[in-house]
Length: 127
Image (cartoon, rainbow, N blue to C red):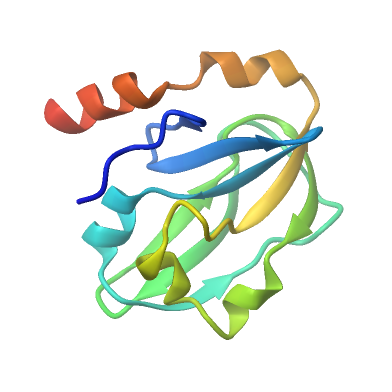
């Protein structure tokens, strides 16, 4: 398993969150893709949709299971990574590069409440 990048925040649902200018890029962690196995489909969220923290936004499907992806914070979905429609497996190959959607948070400081890399690692270690 790869190391957990310390340039982003993490959720209890195994999503990562990384600032890119004024928006957040969101993907799933190496742990999540490893647990799911080979990904075969990504259902992307609707651009322009306003979501609340913890709302189900989209889902990823693997050969073993379907997993929901949740909004880490409240905001507006401003972009979806359409390349994943044909290349879902890129999440398995490079989970920390393959973002799923981008969100403009309604309250940017809410990101500070998410887990840092050490906190996420501790959660995995205690699971």
